[in-house]
Image (cartoon, rainbow, N blue to C red; front, side, top):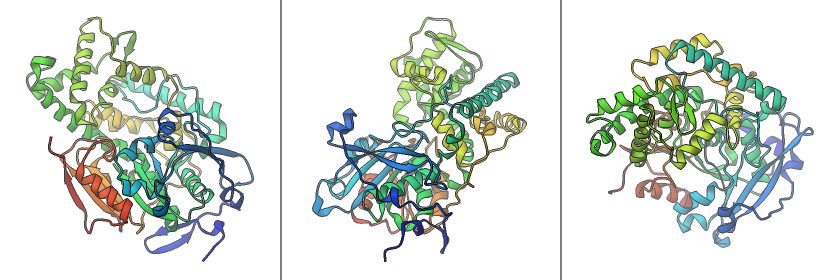
Length: 489
């Protein structure tokens, strides 16, 4: 039965269907022509992708008002005779550019999958080529440590307030519409503009939340969804960040044990306790690293960035050795990867990550009293000495305007495949379990005893890849939740 597009946005709560908030007549957006052109991206051009811009309303409650353009890419299905439809995607963040994401992920997809789907990359609204947010931030992003003292926390409060004020001045009311719910609506416009009745989807990290929100808002438009390294929608996003504190401490212990076994190479301690003590001593005062002075707010983040993947143990040990040398006053030169990280974190080069703040702060309200954050930070220090002041720190969201819409409550029976590693440091394992509970028809694939954030396409694993590829190719979810283990070395 063909229904007007304006009637197709519905929310699924348990088994009760409820109309979504009215968005006005979107016909001109759903029916727009799509002009495919060369992408101008080396990877996408290499794999034969083409790119286009899709026009969407800035404010879906006023579809006759301002518009923006969403950049998408397409790698066409390799066998038109087997083609099932389109598969949209998101690489996480929020704030990550996804235009060339499928160029990477498709490498782990079987021919049975790539023959059936047009693989669609997308820069979500406010990001990359899609009307990017630029608040002129003097640092890279809002997620960093409060530091060790009340004085460093006060500096954090002042800086976060300044970041929010810069966005208000530079972006005005436009920034309030850079949200997950609006990106989900954009995805539905993309679906219609491409002539499809449903979409399939692969989402990583934050992309799992976007995918879950889409299934909640457009259940009848959701086909085969894979959600890798999931966020619990009920704790998005501040709760997810808090959950990461203990997980990163555990990962630090795991890395410290590995490093202690190699003291002859790294000289950071002969026991895990000694290695951890070295790290804790390094994050308490600024360190000169090459031409950069890295303070207590960012030193923990230099370690945080390499913890999600156990394959980076050696690189992290070398990095901590460099920090120790620098702390002793030795002249050091950061490796290229660390130099790039410092340029981004400390100075916002090549560009600050304000788009991440726009989405997080525009999606869900957070407490605004700095005293509450300080109490939480202080409580966390005993068990989370390195990452508690990060995971519980105040962010720019405490100074952001109130979201225009309530946070999305996910609870539906849309089928999906959820993939989660037990050692995930960014979106912890329990978050995948919680999303599985919220999506009652989903199945959970657990990758046990592996420290990894983002599995499919990033960490070769025969069991996970078989489950994902089988689902996309055949639509067959496992009969029950599934447990996988690391491939033999």
